[in-house]
Amino acid sequence: MVDTQVRIVNKCGKDVTKNGKEIGEIIVKGKAVTSEDLNFSQDGWLHTGDLGTMDEEGRINVVKSNHDINGTEEEISTFDIETVLTLHPAVEEVSVVPQPDEALGEVAHAFVVLTAGYNVDEDDLITDVKTKLAPEDPPLKINFMEELPKTSSGKILKTQLENK
Figure 1: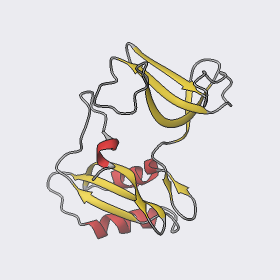
Figure 2 (figure 1 turned 90 degrees about the horizontal axis):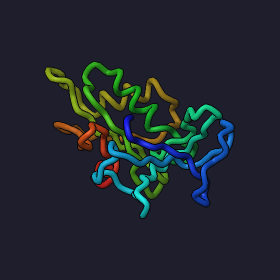
Figure 3 (figure 1 turned 30 degrees about the vertical axis):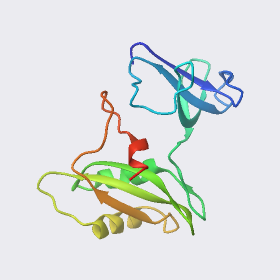
Figure 4 (figure 1 turned 45 degrees about the horizontal axis):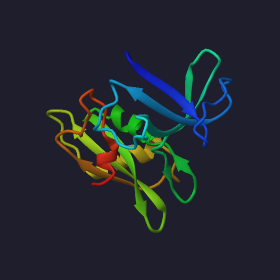
């Protein structure tokens, strides 16, 4: 993106070594990062919470998403659940966020916009996901929406979905 800076910083806020091995938090700053986004530092950097590495040529590799779900067995990426749901013909758009759960730690909560002309219920989509992902993955809740909240640049605002 034009006029956007990306850094990966360690816990002390210093840039990680560009060796493709040292892991840090991905932070961004620039015109494409709007005030609708949360978690800004005082100097204007948006802390994504995503962890990654940077190689010698500046390429970034995301190693852990901020939106991974910590169940009782092991973590699952919200990206994996989103990918499976997106493959369903009835799903136009989807975003998955972790939701606190007393017994399990967290469960997956999917927000789905259906493709025009399709009608599917929560059980159908949950069954589809469970047949394509590991059985020990955390339980899934689904809410259907007319549209997902987005920034002016079109990025889905997961932080707004986490509060629903």
